[in-house]
Length: 198
Image 1 (cartoon, rainbow, N blue to C red):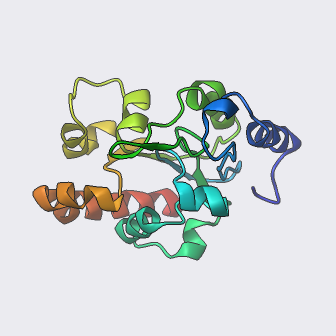
Image 2: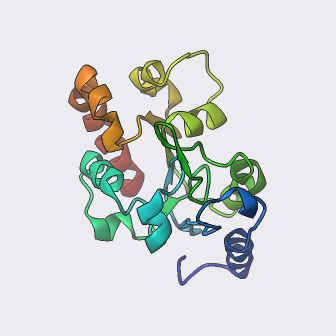
């Protein structure tokens, strides 16, 4: 959290980090992970913390984060500058392991906390919607797949930008869809640069 945060935002973040709504469903217990500030211009909404993020309480502190920063051509210091970039996942706590990767984010988090947090982040210019859960929650569109959404990213501008999840598990998707790194990633970098130059 920013040192310049208002008491209202500080109080809300304290409520989020003290949340125990789905404690009994969390295999490693609650540890809400987020980074927010009133001055942030870029918001990253991903899925939910993995085990490494749960253990360190640092969002995107894993191979997925490395790939995301590569897409953004952004170093760690810039990425974790909460004055500029806010990070608010769909589920704030590690949800547990499923048959093919982590379980979906807990459904309680976004409806309970997102709107309240967004009201206190008035400077957000662009929100990256990473993965299907964020996109399904925030986009009212007719696309049936994440691939279709990402291909038509221009329709979400100026405020939203849909992306695939940068997880190593998605390496096959990236190989099958070379247009993403050839065309979408350069446009993503351009849009993010505009956010901080305007």
